Length: 317
Image 1 (cartoon, rainbow, N blue to C red):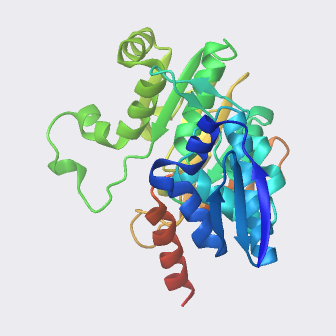
Image 2: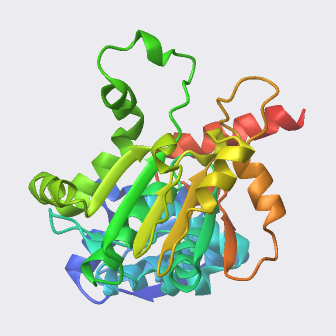
């Protein structure tokens, strides 16, 4: 039986480290098959030598997050464990310090995974970025956060958010109201993200001034978008023609972020996805980057990761 001691700075840090009902420490114990005991300001980790070493790295990573002001939850504890298993625990510090912007409730928006960190870095340093990956990886939310950051810093004059109005098994024609009212439900995730970061009143004010525009993709045709941060969401549901139309709207001093999940295409059978085609055609073009997310970047409920893995296994069969 091998054991190792880790010193904890304070009682408060120990309480945060253990979590409610010791849930954080229990996750580490279960993952690495070790026992962790609190011994008056120090943690004793006992078990197989290799597993104890991994558990200690995970605990030290969590302590580093606490020292940087991060609150621990099941998601970042599990992510820290996955980094240790992949041999990347030294990279944890790179995602703990970046704050993109603050929500109206005072919550800082930060990347929570290495994939998310890479994503915001690519957005900062390139004119066009494709964010491709499964649901729950923060593709849209982080893109909106970067847009709000650029808007507040007066780097752009407008934020333009758009989505293709493609039915996911439902028909738009049966919905009540005019075209805008019919497509509003498709744009709701974009509204929600902006409300979160700007507040409903500020959003309304900026929208009335034309500084923020949320519209279906069809409204982009024939326009040139200068001094704008433009986000195309759910881009897997564009046709190649729509994608080309959209990308050629790019004007001077503008950025484009295109997000989508190529495993959730709602186009009619036989129609190609504009997102899949654009990523392939534009590979290697300077100032255009693609960031691919995996299930490890999912920041929703743990079961979302498991669902994505299960579907991937089924597709391989």
